[in-house]
Length: 487
Ligand code: SAH
Ligand code: SF4
Ligand code: F3S
Image (cartoon, rainbow, N blue to C red):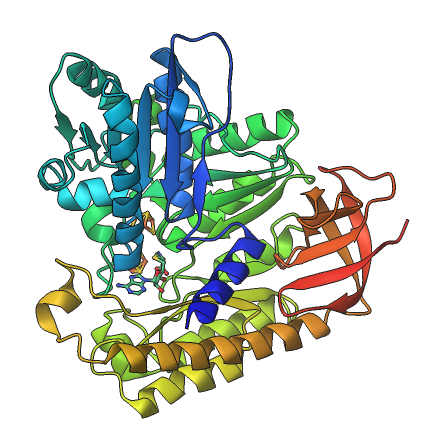
């Protein structure tokens, strides 16, 4: 089973832009002569990685340089994830390692941010003695004050959730950046109540960020040499911004009164520059509209790729998951994507095996849905009960672990087959690829992604990251396409 878990990580790492993979990101060395050093380690989804960039920006103003070495840090921050039990266990194991470090350097400050901080609040201080600081996702502006409180010898907690906070005015400090691709957070929180999911509890109510600040951030990135932005939200299709609701002052100033939908926002960002690729994640099957698909079709620089998590292929299971769509509705959305954008549009999914009461037949429905869609790739998990969620309150977590894992391995095996089939269809074709850097295995090769988000590897020649090239693909594995640049 270990092998299976490693496979999930391989798929997740290769696409490098997805939510909910068990990867860690660490801050880099920065020496601008500031007084103190901050080490920040981020777990969980892209939203968390993006928040760490906001946190770094706030801390920079407070006199901190970032470092990649926690041994030289004055402050260590862990930006945590609660999505599955394993994610929390990883953080707890890390905290006990830091316990040893702190014994040698008691003055070192240790803080927990993000979803685990929000879920456990001050309970974390009791359970993990090494922690000085607990800050939830909507309270990062309060960090300077909280750090000061710890400096003065107290413990500090702020886990208030906000209905308005979007950090719209904070320019993120780009961490772990390749200088080519970047993420822009367009909304926060989630108003859906998927019964398995802890996110509404840890991230609070959904709110959309001012579209003009999003466009400005995209423009600034482009001016700084970036060639791709990914717009991030738990459910981007429900993005909605109306000046009346969100900012009366702006309405009075500009006279703008229309409501801006996700399709409108996509178009606004696509117009920043034809050489700036636009991606987005995550789309919700209940909310994705034909208007969004037509907007994708209209702009060449909006990538042909949609992450459309199904979670299950069975209508009864979807119902108790509270996903608010049926198998048929989901299939209709996939058909719409194929019809409006085309067969080559990349589609990926998230799947959960062994949700409460799931029968073998219902599990088979997930496999047959996969056969119908033939996803390019998927993130696949077995159900992990989360305290406080609707499912934890209402249903018994009654599928034995071995059954969950066996069903998961069947899902993974099916996905591997489909990924290979879908990649084979790309062989013999020329793909426009944005170069992101050297391939992981060799400095003689470059790697980038095509519009459908597939990783493509090819000999370097005289090309460099940030350039668009046409690559003739001549072979593939289930995870990667290989080829040569055609000049
Ligand atoms: N907003 C996104 C997903 C956020 S969480 C969406 O609506 O699809 C990322 C993925 O983690 C989910 O899609 C789901 O597949 C998985 N996940 C969430 N809660 C889980 C749980 N309790 N057990 C196992 N997997 C879970
Ligand atoms: Fe969780 Fe559902 Fe919201 Fe996604 S849409 S974050 S799965 S509650
Ligand atoms: Fe993301 Fe994990 Fe929170 S997936 S929203 S960091 S629970």
